[in-house]
Length: 430
Ligand code: FAD
Image (cartoon, rainbow, N blue to C red; front, side, top):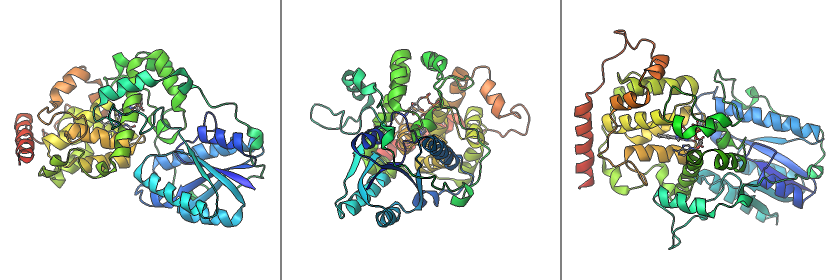
């Protein structure tokens, strides 16, 4: 009999809670990864760097396991179908995994759990990707927090050193000893290599130590760029939060935002396509397609907006300050539905995370929990003046900034600001 450890968004061997439990409680643990065709088939870009990244991580895990005379079993397809196959191929004692809180993942896991339950096979899941998972930080009446600050205070007050300890030692001797299983190539799963460089997973202590001073300036190397590693679990949140606690409280606070938005999504799965504040779904978005295209291409004539969009298109990354500016510009200046921008980011961002992306967009559009009030409209020129005074970031992404090839502003700031306020106001007063 074997037990399965199912990797999903926890692509590492060290300090992996579910894997630790599997190896502690059972013998013959066979690691598994399923390339989920439901997700992969939706990706339009066949050289999506995120798929390449996952493939690379799995290859690394595979190589590490080979050194331990074990291997990782790979399936491609619909997870439920993959489990049906596994049930016919192996005699399975139990399945171990780490919890995933997204709506799709929850419904997938429910199906697998019941499929296994029919054969009396337990499905054990563990907390791994968060320090506090949805439901662990609640207010006095047992409800979820709608506002970040009290959430973060309780989060910090409940944090104990033990929670940041790693899971070790791993009982590697309990891995299923099997000869090398075949890892499909990227091509075999329908993808190609991308041109994009993935940021390193080493947390730069210098950067984290000065984070509170440098994080707002897009021309500086002032943020950690660990988003993709947190998204796919190639680093452990416990190790990173421990570093943050030692080095910089502002950085730790950002990790708490990540958990706040995961909690909001878990309690309010409707936010995936609806405003958190329902009244805001009354806003009559203009949704001008040409203007949307200009925004996507970085051709709005607002340098800070255009630099950000060009950075995103070229690298799969955009600095947080600039994400806030471009999102505000799209939703307020252009009155384009936040869902359009959200979907564009989802397709492009290497660190795309449903909860944080949705949270960030709804924050900027004013439709979300604890959001920017609707009458506060970022002025792109003053944002540029404050955060890229010397035009270093702008010149990097818009070399033609001083020539007549660069477009005139797509809309006048004063006019657009007033139009946004009036539109929101009349929609909300209905
Ligand atoms: P750092 O500044 O070094 O922060 C470290 C980590 O903390 C990040 O990697 C991330 O996991 C977390 N974090 C930081 N800021 C936030 C935040 N405001 N909300 C939630 N988590 C945060 N973040 C994503 O991880 N995925 C997204 O898809 C995403 N979409 C966004 C969309 C909009 C419109 C906005 C305004 C923000 C979005 N963010 C998103 C949050 C933030 O911009 C990124 O996490 C950050 O820029 C990633 O860069 P970094 O890894 O250098 O982060």
